[in-house]
Length: 143
Length: 143
DNA sequence: GCGAAGAAATAGCCTATGCTATATTTTTCG
DNA sequence: CGAAAAATATAGCATAGGCTATTTCTTCGC
Ligand SMILES: [Mn+2]
Ligand SMILES: [Mn+2]
Ligand SMILES: [Mn+2]
Ligand SMILES: [Mn+2]
Image (cartoon, rainbow over all chains, first blue to last red; front, side, top):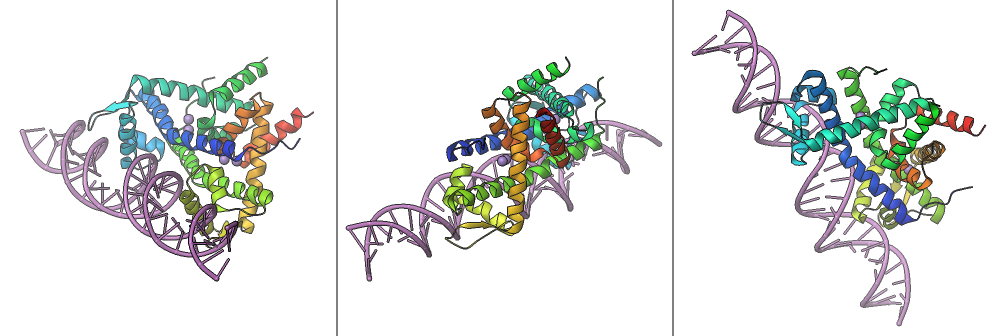
């Protein structure tokens, strides 16, 4: 069955969706990781955020400005970064999805290291519907 | 098993990898789709490329300029776009990976429509190692 | 309490991707 | 053939996300 190709309009919608996802992917990674830092170290410093993201410090500062602009984080000059309620909620959701994606990859035979590496990018494109399917598959696999 | 968190350096590497993937994702989508157009219509016109990508025509023109710069496509003003050998090779690889990702998603219980939607973004983050795991899983699932 | 060190902010630059508006070229058709 | 229409290119603008260099603020240690 050579599954017929999508209509041009459908395909355009898919690409548009992928672009939208991309626009929030960076925010998701930042809030998840800032949540980690607060949990592990009690606070999230700009220097640590930059180090974990693998970017220069001004790059992290600019990203934090965007998080604040979008209501996901708060901070005062020369002080640590905190998550708003919305930010913390997003962090929790993103963290859970990340774990599920890694587990799903491992469950279908991907080596753990590779699963972690690929999941960092894949996770952002996993819709709620797909996430539920992953969870159901994992529940079934666990008997 | 609370799988210990990655070292900051490891995590930074993962994020860096995801950023690199992102930089080539757009090129991959363009070459795959240009290949489709050539196969279906005999040629790839800028207007059709823009329509399928869901972007304005000048946006497509600019992307084509980048494809040319990177040796993946050729074109002359007011004429169609063609893939170079490297471009055609990439298109084939990307097309195969796209199919495998969709099949894998369906195999673990994702509805076909959703699989197509999510795959458009996921595919770019699927490494060779993960792709091989997907293929092995699908082969096994087919008994 | 004060100066050095460290952390964060700011300035200024770059590329990639979007867009709209407009100019130019090719194609079509009366 | 030649004008109108269609397609493509170009100009100019915006935002996101990188960077380095420099300034400013906080913290630490004597
Ligand atoms: Mn991620
Ligand atoms: Mn993640
Ligand atoms: Mn894609
Ligand atoms: Mn694709």
